[in-house]
Amino acid sequence: METILEIKNLNLFFKGEEKSYQALYNVNLELKKGLIHSLVGESGCGKTMTAMSVIKLLPKSAYIESGEIIFKGENLLEYKESQMRTIRGNRIALIPQDPMTSLNPLYTIGNQLLESVRIHTGVSKRQGLRKVREVMDLVRIPDAEKKLDFYPHEFSGGMKQRIIIAMALACNPELIIADEPTTALDVTIQKQIMDLILDIKKEFGLTVLLISHDLALVSNYTDTVSVMYSGHIVEQAGAEEFFRDPSHPYSIALLNSLPGNNPAQKLKTIAGAPPSIQEIITGCNFHPRCEFCEPGLCDIEQPKLTPRRENHYSACLKF
Image (cartoon, rainbow, N blue to C red; front, side, top):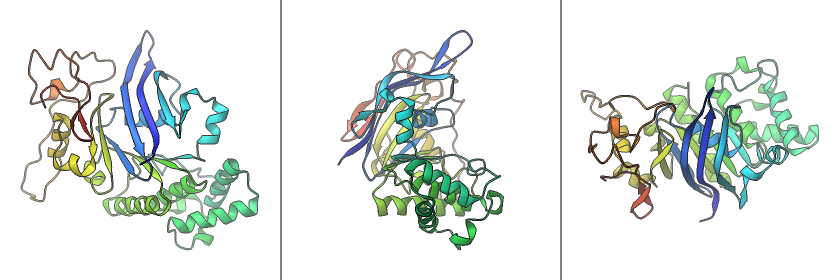
């Protein structure tokens, strides 16, 4: 199966007032064409920074010290900004976290979609409008022709997210980065949005990098899973095997914290909190919260991501 995107040994830092702090540590990801690859973990673990590194839309204080991001055989980290503008929106599209703030309240939906299409493709206004109508229909917005004249405030959260997805699809991308695409939506609408992304992926053979902290949602839609903790990838596996037999203590703890079918069952929690990037932790970054921690080992040696079974990798000294 063709690899469409490969992240190799990505190291990212943030500039502080007196020193820089590392946020990503030798991150490696491989996305196969036509699959949904989920990057999961608690808030602040580095998921969004990994995704934004791909399209080089990082905060001003962030910088990539080393690594490669290979898209269709080309290292994007070597691209100039003018070259990246031909990639963003065209070949790699972003579905951002919050649909409520991703649309300009002063312009109609039709104008915003049309502007996006014309900027990225250079087509005429007539051709652009034809494409806008196509993607509005594709994301199942009823009365699409009429809704082109609506402003963002006239849409529900779910409809706004459909419009954001329409913008992502308007230029026929090969890869979509979906960064927490169901944030702030209720459970029913979450399922509708994820079903839509899945259907589009199947219909057009798109590759999707899904960023999420919601393992319950991810379990129904993903093909492969990478678990991130404190800037490190700690486990990678096919979705079926990961949810059946996780092999890193953090993954196990995350899955154990999910609600079960028994309403009387008490939820398990993970002790403590993820470290900030300013904290220096020797050994495994997860060891202060790990119930399997072995003093004299886990607090000294930094584990590496190693194969446990075929296509299943984990970074743990004990598992």
